[in-house]
Amino acid sequence: MGFQRISTCRGTPLTAHIFTIDVEDWFHISDLDNTPLVGTWHEYESRVERNLRDLLDLLDSHGVKATCFFLGWVGEKFPGLVRETAARGHEVASHGYAHELVYEITPEVFRADIRRAKQILEGCFAGTVQGYRAPGFSITPQTPWAWDILAEEGYRYDSSLFASSRSFGGDPDAYPKPHVRPSGKSEGGSSGVVAMPLRPARAFGKSLIFSGGGYLRLLPTSAITFLADKLAQPDAPIIYYIHPREIDVEQPRLPMPFGRKFRSYVNLSSTRGKIAALCRRYEFERMIDWVEANETRLPTLSGRMHASA
Ligand SMILES: [Zn+2]
Image (cartoon, rainbow, N blue to C red; front, top):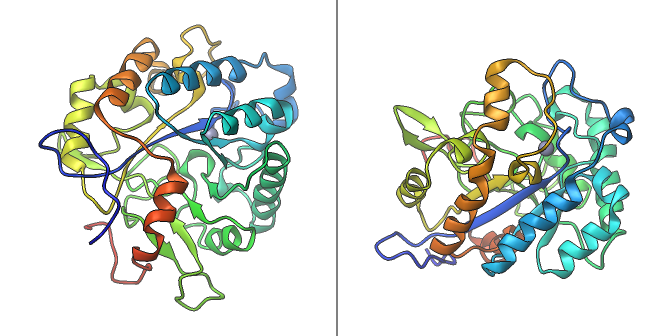
Protein backbone atom coordinates (compact mmCIF):
# COMPACT_ATOMS: atom_id res chain seq x y z
CA MET A 1 0.00 0.00 0.00
CA GLY A 2 3.00 2.27 0.40
CA PHE A 3 2.11 3.61 3.83
CA GLN A 4 4.96 4.96 5.87
CA ARG A 5 6.01 2.10 8.11
CA ILE A 6 7.90 2.55 11.31
CA SER A 7 8.63 -0.10 13.89
CA THR A 8 11.79 -1.68 15.15
CA CYS A 9 10.30 -4.53 17.10
CA ARG A 10 11.49 -7.83 15.60
CA GLY A 11 8.64 -10.08 14.50
CA THR A 12 6.08 -7.32 14.80
CA PRO A 13 4.10 -6.24 11.75
CA LEU A 14 5.33 -2.83 10.71
CA THR A 15 3.23 -0.01 12.00
CA ALA A 16 3.48 3.51 13.37
CA HIS A 17 3.18 4.53 17.01
CA ILE A 18 2.05 8.01 18.01
CA PHE A 19 2.31 9.39 21.53
CA THR A 20 -0.24 12.09 22.34
CA ILE A 21 -0.67 14.27 25.42
CA ASP A 22 -3.86 16.16 26.28
CA VAL A 23 -2.29 19.15 28.02
CA GLU A 24 -4.63 20.14 30.81
CA ASP A 25 -4.52 20.35 34.61
CA TRP A 26 -5.54 17.96 37.37
CA PHE A 27 -8.92 19.67 37.79
CA HIS A 28 -9.88 19.28 34.11
CA ILE A 29 -11.74 16.00 34.53
CA SER A 30 -14.97 15.93 32.52
CA ASP A 31 -18.44 14.60 33.18
CA LEU A 32 -18.49 14.84 36.97
CA ASP A 33 -21.44 16.35 38.80
CA ASN A 34 -19.02 18.91 40.20
CA THR A 35 -16.56 19.33 37.28
CA PRO A 36 -15.08 22.81 37.87
CA LEU A 37 -16.29 25.33 35.28
CA VAL A 38 -13.92 27.52 33.31
CA GLY A 39 -14.74 30.64 35.35
CA THR A 40 -13.38 29.00 38.53
CA TRP A 41 -10.22 27.40 37.16
CA HIS A 42 -8.01 30.27 38.32
CA GLU A 43 -8.88 29.38 41.91
CA TYR A 44 -7.06 26.03 41.72
CA GLU A 45 -3.35 25.37 42.18
CA SER A 46 -1.89 24.68 38.74
CA ARG A 47 0.41 21.69 38.33
CA VAL A 48 0.38 21.36 34.54
CA GLU A 49 3.65 23.20 33.84
CA ARG A 50 5.75 20.99 36.07
CA ASN A 51 3.97 17.79 35.02
CA LEU A 52 4.26 18.47 31.30
CA ARG A 53 7.95 19.37 31.63
CA ASP A 54 8.54 16.09 33.52
CA LEU A 55 6.74 14.17 30.80
CA LEU A 56 8.67 15.90 28.01
CA ASP A 57 11.95 15.25 29.86
CA LEU A 58 11.10 11.56 29.93
CA LEU A 59 10.18 11.49 26.22
CA ASP A 60 13.20 13.59 25.22
CA SER A 61 15.54 11.22 27.08
CA HIS A 62 14.36 8.53 24.65
CA GLY A 63 14.35 10.79 21.60
CA VAL A 64 10.55 10.51 21.29
CA LYS A 65 8.57 13.38 19.80
CA ALA A 66 4.92 13.66 20.83
CA THR A 67 1.79 15.48 19.73
CA CYS A 68 0.53 17.78 22.49
CA PHE A 69 -3.15 18.77 22.38
CA PHE A 70 -3.06 21.96 24.49
CA LEU A 71 -6.13 23.39 26.11
CA GLY A 72 -6.33 26.99 24.88
CA TRP A 73 -6.79 28.08 28.49
CA VAL A 74 -3.45 26.50 29.38
CA GLY A 75 -1.80 28.31 26.46
CA GLU A 76 -3.29 31.60 27.61
CA LYS A 77 -1.96 31.10 31.12
CA PHE A 78 1.40 29.56 30.20
CA PRO A 79 2.43 30.79 26.73
CA GLY A 80 6.06 29.93 27.52
CA LEU A 81 5.09 26.30 28.02
CA VAL A 82 3.60 26.15 24.51
CA ARG A 83 6.69 27.85 23.06
CA GLU A 84 9.02 25.49 24.91
CA THR A 85 7.06 22.41 23.78
CA ALA A 86 7.40 23.46 20.13
CA ALA A 87 11.07 24.41 20.58
CA ARG A 88 11.75 20.92 21.94
CA GLY A 89 10.41 19.46 18.69
CA HIS A 90 7.00 18.30 19.86
CA GLU A 91 3.84 19.13 17.93
CA VAL A 92 1.50 21.79 19.37
CA ALA A 93 -2.15 20.94 18.63
CA SER A 94 -5.49 22.04 20.09
CA HIS A 95 -7.74 20.56 22.79
CA GLY A 96 -10.21 23.46 22.47
CA TYR A 97 -10.39 26.33 24.96
CA ALA A 98 -12.90 25.61 27.72
CA HIS A 99 -12.92 21.78 27.83
CA GLU A 100 -16.62 21.48 27.12
CA LEU A 101 -17.98 18.22 25.75
CA VAL A 102 -18.83 18.80 22.09
CA TYR A 103 -22.17 16.97 22.26
CA GLU A 104 -23.25 19.30 25.08
CA ILE A 105 -22.67 22.57 23.18
CA THR A 106 -24.09 24.16 20.05
CA PRO A 107 -22.26 24.32 16.71
CA GLU A 108 -21.80 28.07 17.29
CA VAL A 109 -20.19 27.58 20.71
CA PHE A 110 -18.00 24.81 19.29
CA ARG A 111 -16.80 27.04 16.46
CA ALA A 112 -15.95 29.88 18.84
CA ASP A 113 -14.15 27.49 21.21
CA ILE A 114 -11.87 25.86 18.62
CA ARG A 115 -11.20 29.20 16.93
CA ARG A 116 -10.19 30.83 20.21
CA ALA A 117 -7.89 27.93 21.15
CA LYS A 118 -6.17 27.99 17.74
CA GLN A 119 -5.62 31.74 17.88
CA ILE A 120 -4.19 31.65 21.40
CA LEU A 121 -1.87 28.73 20.72
CA GLU A 122 -0.60 30.15 17.42
CA GLY A 123 0.15 33.36 19.26
CA CYS A 124 2.54 31.44 21.51
CA PHE A 125 4.94 29.98 18.95
CA ALA A 126 6.04 30.37 15.35
CA GLY A 127 3.95 27.65 13.79
CA THR A 128 0.48 26.50 12.79
CA VAL A 129 -1.94 24.43 14.85
CA GLN A 130 -3.26 21.73 12.56
CA GLY A 131 -4.69 19.08 14.87
CA TYR A 132 -7.63 18.95 17.26
CA ARG A 133 -8.84 16.53 19.92
CA ALA A 134 -12.18 17.02 21.64
CA PRO A 135 -12.47 16.79 25.43
CA GLY A 136 -13.69 13.32 26.40
CA PHE A 137 -13.57 12.10 22.77
CA SER A 138 -16.92 13.87 22.45
CA ILE A 139 -17.22 14.04 18.66
CA THR A 140 -19.90 11.40 18.19
CA PRO A 141 -22.86 10.65 15.87
CA GLN A 142 -24.65 13.40 17.84
CA THR A 143 -22.27 16.01 16.38
CA PRO A 144 -22.12 15.46 12.59
CA TRP A 145 -21.67 19.22 12.14
CA ALA A 146 -18.31 19.22 13.93
CA TRP A 147 -16.36 17.98 10.89
CA ASP A 148 -17.31 20.85 8.61
CA ILE A 149 -16.61 23.37 11.35
CA LEU A 150 -13.16 21.89 11.99
CA ALA A 151 -12.36 22.17 8.26
CA GLU A 152 -13.72 25.71 8.04
CA GLU A 153 -11.67 26.81 11.05
CA GLY A 154 -8.46 25.59 9.44
CA TYR A 155 -7.89 22.29 11.19
CA ARG A 156 -6.29 19.62 9.04
CA TYR A 157 -6.86 16.56 11.21
CA ASP A 158 -8.85 15.44 14.22
CA SER A 159 -8.15 12.73 16.79
CA SER A 160 -11.46 12.74 18.65
CA LEU A 161 -13.02 9.48 17.46
CA PHE A 162 -12.83 6.77 20.12
CA ALA A 163 -14.02 3.60 18.40
CA SER A 164 -15.22 1.83 21.52
CA SER A 165 -17.58 2.29 24.45
CA ARG A 166 -16.75 4.78 27.22
CA SER A 167 -18.63 6.04 30.24
CA PHE A 168 -19.06 9.27 28.20
CA GLY A 169 -18.08 10.24 24.66
CA GLY A 170 -16.78 7.63 22.22
CA ASP A 171 -18.53 5.85 19.36
CA PRO A 172 -18.22 2.04 19.15
CA ASP A 173 -19.42 2.15 15.52
CA ALA A 174 -16.88 4.72 14.32
CA TYR A 175 -14.66 3.64 11.44
CA PRO A 176 -11.52 2.85 13.46
CA LYS A 177 -8.73 3.61 10.97
CA PRO A 178 -7.45 6.91 9.58
CA HIS A 179 -9.72 8.30 6.89
CA VAL A 180 -10.86 11.56 5.34
CA ARG A 181 -14.15 13.13 6.38
CA PRO A 182 -15.47 14.77 3.20
CA SER A 183 -16.29 18.39 3.77
CA GLY A 184 -19.87 19.41 3.00
CA LYS A 185 -18.45 21.95 0.59
CA SER A 186 -16.14 19.55 -1.21
CA GLU A 187 -18.77 16.93 -2.17
CA GLY A 188 -16.65 13.88 -1.41
CA GLY A 189 -13.42 15.56 -2.39
CA SER A 190 -10.20 15.31 -0.42
CA SER A 191 -10.33 18.69 1.28
CA GLY A 192 -12.05 17.40 4.40
CA VAL A 193 -10.51 16.80 7.78
CA VAL A 194 -8.39 13.68 8.32
CA ALA A 195 -9.81 11.56 11.14
CA MET A 196 -7.24 9.78 13.34
CA PRO A 197 -9.35 7.47 15.53
CA LEU A 198 -8.36 5.63 18.66
CA ARG A 199 -8.62 1.98 17.61
CA PRO A 200 -9.59 -0.89 19.92
CA ALA A 201 -8.12 -4.38 20.26
CA ARG A 202 -10.14 -7.43 21.22
CA ALA A 203 -9.10 -8.57 24.68
CA PHE A 204 -10.83 -10.31 27.58
CA GLY A 205 -13.92 -10.65 25.36
CA LYS A 206 -14.15 -6.89 25.04
CA SER A 207 -13.32 -4.17 22.56
CA LEU A 208 -10.59 -2.40 24.49
CA ILE A 209 -8.65 0.79 23.88
CA PHE A 210 -5.65 -0.11 25.98
CA SER A 211 -3.37 2.70 24.80
CA GLY A 212 -4.53 5.40 27.21
CA GLY A 213 -6.65 6.28 30.19
CA GLY A 214 -7.30 3.82 33.01
CA TYR A 215 -6.32 0.77 30.96
CA LEU A 216 -2.82 2.11 30.27
CA ARG A 217 -2.31 2.53 34.00
CA LEU A 218 -4.10 -0.66 35.05
CA LEU A 219 -2.62 -3.18 32.61
CA PRO A 220 0.97 -4.42 33.00
CA THR A 221 3.47 -3.33 30.36
CA SER A 222 3.56 -6.86 28.94
CA ALA A 223 -0.19 -6.75 28.25
CA ILE A 224 0.05 -3.33 26.63
CA THR A 225 2.87 -4.34 24.28
CA PHE A 226 1.12 -7.67 23.54
CA LEU A 227 -2.02 -5.80 22.48
CA ALA A 228 -0.07 -3.15 20.58
CA ASP A 229 1.78 -5.85 18.62
CA LYS A 230 -1.49 -7.68 17.99
CA LEU A 231 -3.14 -4.51 16.72
CA ALA A 232 -0.24 -3.47 14.52
CA GLN A 233 -1.30 -2.69 10.94
CA PRO A 234 0.58 -0.57 8.43
CA ASP A 235 -2.40 1.61 7.50
CA ALA A 236 -3.39 2.57 11.05
CA PRO A 237 -1.03 3.78 13.76
CA ILE A 238 -1.35 2.89 17.43
CA ILE A 239 -2.24 6.14 19.18
CA TYR A 240 -1.35 6.42 22.87
CA TYR A 241 -2.93 9.17 24.96
CA ILE A 242 -2.08 10.52 28.36
CA HIS A 243 -2.54 13.63 30.51
CA PRO A 244 0.28 15.37 32.41
CA ARG A 245 -1.59 14.65 35.69
CA GLU A 246 -1.17 10.91 35.08
CA ILE A 247 2.46 11.03 36.22
CA ASP A 248 1.59 13.17 39.27
CA VAL A 249 1.14 10.84 42.23
CA GLU A 250 0.73 13.76 44.65
CA GLN A 251 -2.02 15.59 42.75
CA PRO A 252 -5.10 16.71 44.71
CA ARG A 253 -8.14 14.53 44.11
CA LEU A 254 -11.49 15.81 42.89
CA PRO A 255 -14.49 14.34 44.70
CA MET A 256 -16.17 11.66 42.56
CA PRO A 257 -17.90 8.27 42.83
CA PHE A 258 -15.70 5.27 43.68
CA GLY A 259 -15.69 3.66 40.22
CA ARG A 260 -14.71 6.90 38.55
CA LYS A 261 -12.08 7.60 41.19
CA PHE A 262 -10.55 4.19 40.49
CA ARG A 263 -10.36 4.86 36.74
CA SER A 264 -8.98 8.35 37.23
CA TYR A 265 -6.28 7.60 39.79
CA VAL A 266 -5.38 3.89 39.63
CA ASN A 267 -1.68 3.08 39.32
CA LEU A 268 -0.42 6.66 38.82
CA SER A 269 2.97 5.53 40.08
CA SER A 270 3.27 3.03 37.20
CA THR A 271 2.88 5.53 34.37
CA ARG A 272 6.48 6.70 34.02
CA GLY A 273 7.86 3.16 33.86
CA LYS A 274 5.33 2.14 31.23
CA ILE A 275 6.05 5.16 29.06
CA ALA A 276 9.78 4.46 29.29
CA ALA A 277 9.21 0.82 28.32
CA LEU A 278 7.10 1.83 25.31
CA CYS A 279 9.73 4.39 24.27
CA ARG A 280 12.42 1.70 24.37
CA ARG A 281 10.38 -0.81 22.38
CA TYR A 282 8.86 1.31 19.61
CA GLU A 283 9.70 4.24 17.39
CA PHE A 284 7.26 7.14 17.58
CA GLU A 285 6.34 9.96 15.27
CA ARG A 286 4.23 13.08 15.64
CA MET A 287 0.66 12.87 14.40
CA ILE A 288 1.09 15.71 11.89
CA ASP A 289 4.07 13.91 10.35
CA TRP A 290 2.04 10.72 9.88
CA VAL A 291 -0.85 12.69 8.37
CA GLU A 292 1.45 14.54 5.97
CA ALA A 293 3.10 11.31 4.81
CA ASN A 294 -0.12 9.33 4.36
CA GLU A 295 -2.96 11.80 3.76
CA THR A 296 -3.23 11.29 0.00
CA ARG A 297 -3.57 7.52 0.38
CA LEU A 298 -6.36 7.57 2.95
CA PRO A 299 -9.88 6.43 2.06
CA THR A 300 -12.64 9.00 2.12
CA LEU A 301 -15.47 8.05 4.46
CA SER A 302 -18.36 6.42 2.67
CA GLY A 303 -21.52 4.68 3.78
CA ARG A 304 -19.84 1.30 3.32
CA MET A 305 -17.14 1.93 5.88
CA HIS A 306 -17.94 0.59 9.31
CA ALA A 307 -16.37 -0.69 12.49
CA SER A 308 -15.31 -4.08 11.10
CA ALA A 309 -12.28 -2.59 9.31
ZN1 LIG B 1 -9.22 16.78 28.13
